[in-house]
Structures are given as structure tokens and as C-alpha cells.
Length: 159
Image (tube, rainbow, N blue to C red; front, side, top):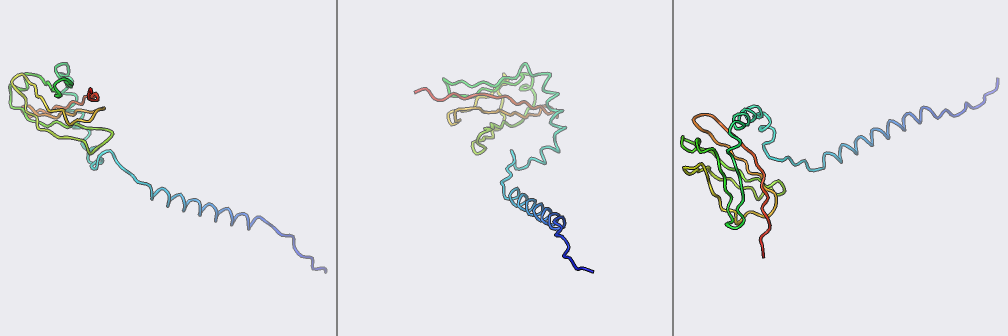
């Protein structure tokens, strides 16, 4: 009997190399992904999602009076004018205004809702940076909650 050397079989080495490469790539991908910053739009994003249905109910109630709601920017007077239904101003009404800047969260402002007899409120807009602003108004009238979200564009100052 002759003792010839067996031919080299590359399959076991190839399979081990494939799994080693796969595990290395997956480990590198996990390290890369976990080192990336994960910023959310709002710090309490998940809690806001839980309250989503009540927000939809507010929007549905607001739809009935939507034609009476206006948010305008008076560039000449540097004022932001908010008009809600006058009927809401005649009843006990409380709420808040959130001026939201999508491009820079640090510029956001919160104001208390204080309507006059006509259902209007004027806010100083001199310190609003030029660009897109979202005006979110949440108010309560006799236990019923309302919500509107309107966008305005503050133009750059005229030199």
C-alpha cells in the first residue's frame, strides 16, 4: 500500500474564513451604529406618541372652528397676531402658545394664552429669527381642549 498524501480540501478553511469575516463585519457594524448620535425631535418623543389619540381628538374639535383661527406676522409692527374664535374669548379660556423653530430648537418660545375680548392676542416678534416658525396653540374652553398648528415665515429685516 502506498501512502500518498491526501489532496488539500479548501472547503473547511473557506467556511471558517467566511464565518469569521461575517462575525467581524457584524461586530464592526454594531460598533459603528451604536457610536452614532441618535437625536430625537423632542426629548419626550415617546411620551408624546402615547398621547397621540387625545391630540387627534383636539384637532377634530378644532376643525369645526378652523375658519376663525388666524396666525399672521405683521412685519411693519414686528408683531405676531393670533386670532381665535371670539366665542372662546367670551368664556373662561386658558392655554399656551408654543413658537417652534424646526431648524433650531434653542430658539423655541412658550407664551401664555391671553386673549382680548375679540379673541386676539399680539406677541412681540422682534426677537424672532427670520425663517420658518410653527405656531402651536393649545387651549381649553369650558373643559373642551383645542389645538392648532400653523406655519409662518418671518422675513429678514429690511435694511
